Image (cartoon, rainbow, N blue to C red; front, top):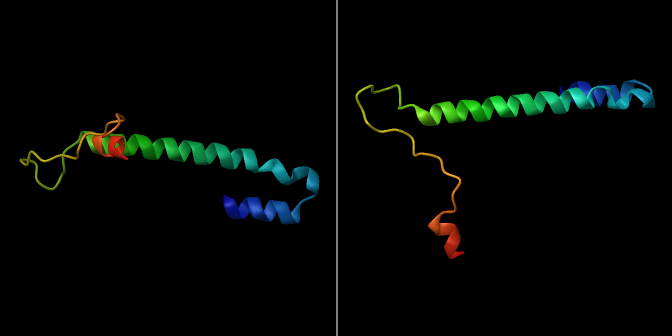
Length: 71
């Protein structure tokens, strides 16, 4: 996508330079949201390697940690 955007900048007239920029921003947003949703899903499940293990990923929290409060 970025390569296509650079090619458009150099190969088309000045009026069409922003033709792919909006599409690129939308695609980056969609891919970022998909990545965040996938990370949330992975965080909610235990590891698939050992079904009987009770270990899971640490829960994510947006609360301020004690470490940050000390700085």
